[in-house]
Length: 119
Image (cartoon, rainbow, N blue to C red; front, side):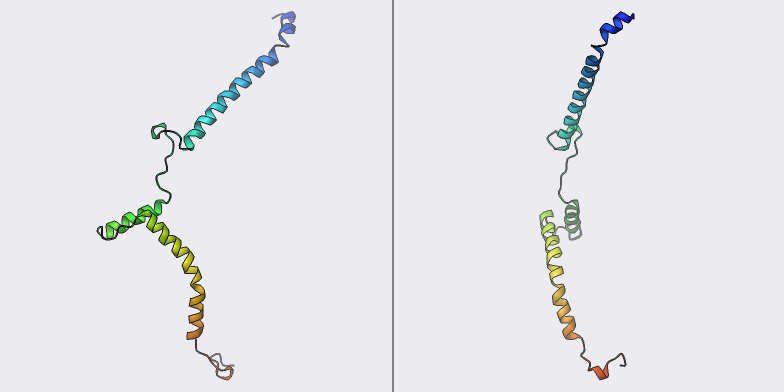
């Protein structure tokens, strides 16, 4: 290349670089959008997107195990297990005050002079 050709190409070179950068950016944006679509569940299962079948796999497993142990006599649904878990998480802490009350009622009352500590 001669110096005259380089002088003629100097104004065009940044434009060509910007064009290639824009093409690369558009390709990356397209790839990101395609990957996000797979994550949103908007794709078909054969696309390799993660499909979530159950909200709480522990509840589903527990209901299957309980049905197997009881030979089908007790067969709760995963929703039943979730409700039972919710009740356990809300009612049991509120019963703590009731248990404390019974513990104080059942505790022996000692006069200060006959304390088991010997004071």
